[in-house]
Amino acid sequence: MITSNHNPKIKLVRALLSRARDRREAGAFVVEGVRLVEEAANRDWRFETVLYDDSLNERGKFLVERLKPRGIEVEEISQSLMKSLSDTESPQGILAVLQFSQLPITNSPNFILIPDQIRDPGNLGTLLRSAAATGVQAVLVPPETTDAFAPKVLRSGMGAHFKLPIHSTNWEEIERIVKSTNLQVLIADMDGQSCWETDLHQPVALVIGSEAEGASESARGLANGKISVPMSGVMESLNAGVAGSVLMFEVVRQRTV
Image (cartoon, rainbow, N blue to C red; front, side):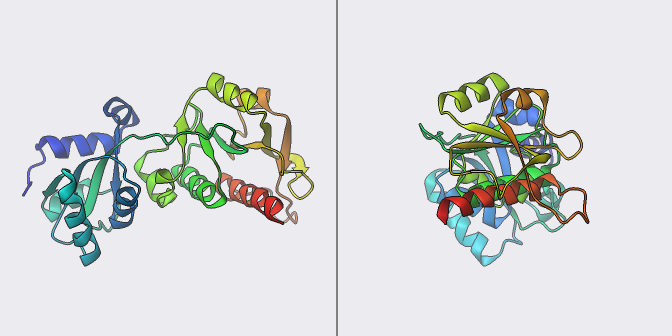
C-alpha cells in the first residue's frame, strides 16, 4: 500500500491534476471516480496507473479486478492520501492516469464544435457532454480555451471525452479543416439570425464564444454568419454551456424532422 506523499506515482498524479503544461509534457491526464474510470475502460483507453483505497464500493472493486489482468499498474493507497489527491469533496476511492489518445476526425464531417475562449471548466465540460449527446463529429479547441482535459472539465463532461474526437489545435489548422470540408462557420451571437430560421441541414461548424468576450477575432475572420437563441427578453443572455447546448440540439432537431 502507498502511504507516502513522496511516492513517484503520487507526485505524478499531483502534477497532472494541477498543471496543463505537465499534462502536455507527460501525454497523460487523470480521471477520478468509478464512472469515469469505467467509461475509459469500456472504451479501451490506455491506462498507465490505477490508484484506489479501501472505501471503494462494490462496483469499483469489480472494476479494479477487471483492470488488473490488462497489465495495468494497480496500487492501493491510504484513504488520507486519496483525499489529499482528490479534486472533489467526496472522493469515490479511485482514480486513474490515462494516456492521451485523440480519436480521429471523420474524412467529411458535417457537424463540428469550436469552443472559443471558453475559460470556465464547467461550461466547457457541459459543451463537450452536449456535443457527445448530439452527434458532433469533432471538437476543435483553440489555444484561448481552457484545457479540455483539466479535472473539472473531465467531471463536467461525464465521459464525453472518451466518445468524441477532441483536438487542441491552432487557428491555422482549424481554418484548414473547415475550408477543406466546406463547413459553414456560424458564431453564436445575440445579434445573429434565430436558430429556428437558420438552415442547419448544411455542414456546419458552431463557434461558441465566452460570455465575457464573445468570439475571438480569429473566429470572426472564419465566420460565414451569426446564429442566436431566441429569448423572451426577460434575460439578457445565457451562459456559454447552455447556449451552445441549445444550438447543438437545434441542429439535431432540424436534421431529424
